Image 1 (tube, helix red, strand yellow):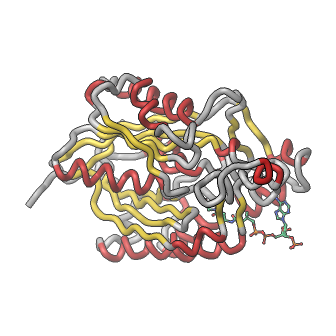
Image 2: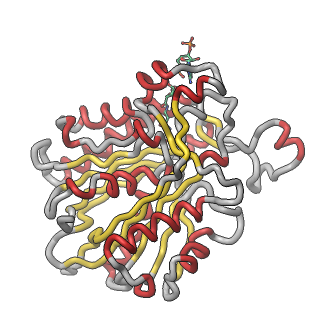
Image 3: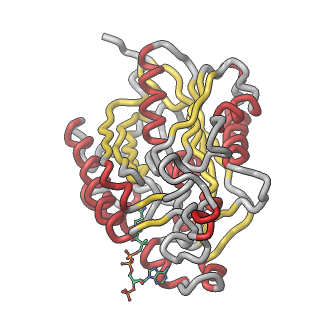
Length: 331
Ligand code: UT7
């Protein structure tokens, strides 16, 4: 039997300097700090202000952080998966540009779009390639400039999202550390509830679509919330059962940061102690493809070799899933 597992061997991240606080949002829409804090757990988010910089900038900075932290030679990277919902441009994959910019001259690259589950699906893809033995170093970057698709007059969305990026390097491991199992799902019903109407092949950009603000994210928050709670908790519980994991043997829940109440509900279903739930939503909001690697990067110091990590995400589409991974190193 093949005993090669796909381990995460390095992480990195980047968030822009500009902080958009709940108080500042009170000047833009009818909302208040107390409502946002109690309903979402978010206190502030980061915004990439420079109009001439896109998600590639965020991703490049996160990749450079990873490269510096572990002294990686970018020329050794075989493949780069750029998980994003906000590519620099609709045509010309952003990951290709990012690979060239970080010196990954021997890699091939592409973008992967599955809304908030983009990074989780990217982890799955990278792990399969590593396990197959075909590639030895795969960089998965999750980066989103959500501020580029948010209407700052819409309180249903502008309070939630922020900009950021994170990166993780996958390499073969023969000691049992790394990717163990996954349960990934999707359901097309979701596109009615979380979407951007225009700018794609169904409704190309026009003066009318711009006038009608159809290039911004729209969300039926209540419906998405319900699906998110039941599905993210469901897959996390399933992956625990399937791998005979108990609340004691799970060390960390690494969950998509969309709403603290969704994360708490997932942890409850898993019977997990709060101390095992990684959380940084209060500082960054929902950074879409970047939430999972941002957690890994922020909490890297606390992760120990052999720790059992359960990743979970839920996002537009709908897309969702859970991955069980054994952490491979002490930092
Ligand atoms: O990552 C991708 C997936 N996305 C998600 O997982 C997001 C899922 N959804 C959510 O996180 C939540 O649904 C929201 C945070 C978006 C909204 O929270 P909610 O508890 O579902 O609020 P609601 O939409 O049911 O609105 C409750 C009340 C309403 O007022 P009435 O009708 O009760 O008088 C809203 O008009 O709160 C009002 N409201 C607000 N008030 C202050 C809605 N948005 C705001 C706001 N500030 N920003």
